[in-house]
Structure formats: C-alpha cells, structure tokens
Length: 136
Image: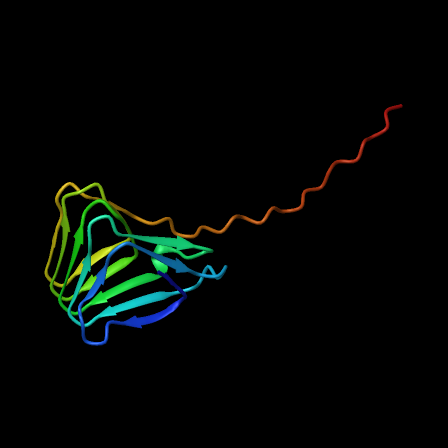
C-alpha cells in the first residue's frame, strides 16, 4: 500500500500492518504522516515501512491509545507514542525513530536507531582572489 501525507485514523478499531507500507512525500521534505490507533498497534512479522520521495522518519507519528507490539524482522520507521506499553519482540527488525510510552517499553535484542535530523549545508562564501603583482 502507498499512502500520501496526511492523518489516518483507525476509526475505533485496532491498527495492524502486514506487508509493506510505503509513505510517499512527493518531493516535500516537510510532509507529515500521522496514524491514530484507537486501541492497539500491531506490526506483524516481516512487515516494513518504506519512505520515498523525501519522506522522513522524524515526520511520521504513530499515536496509540493503548499499546503497540512490533513483531521482529521488519523495518519500521517513525515515532510511536502510546498511552500504556510498547513491546518489541525478538527479531532482526530495526526501528528508525523514537519509542515513547506512558508505561513500559520492552526490548529484547532489538535495534532502535535515531533518525538523521536535517542539517543544512553551509552556504559557501565568496572569497577574493589576490591579483598578481608586478615585480620590477
């Protein structure tokens, strides 16, 4: 499934991800994706979130009313904010983002990576080239 920037609400149901979810920013590096789960978020084995065309992990938010479970071996992107608990099940999966819970966060040999924040490239300044001097 491919989604554009916006707010997505589970409509009172649990939110689950199976397979690949592609978030397409359409060249807008400021594009924001917000996912709201009324109860739980479950990321199933082998599932992944792919960012393309300028989408950034720091602009992806998963808000969850209860708890989130990430079943290892996938590639997950974004910030998970839950009321109760986050559990990452053992696996080869990688989370690029933040895990924030009002209760507990349980990790078991998982990898959580901080995303690369945007750092502006310094603008080069003009420099004067010395003019050649004549020698007598």
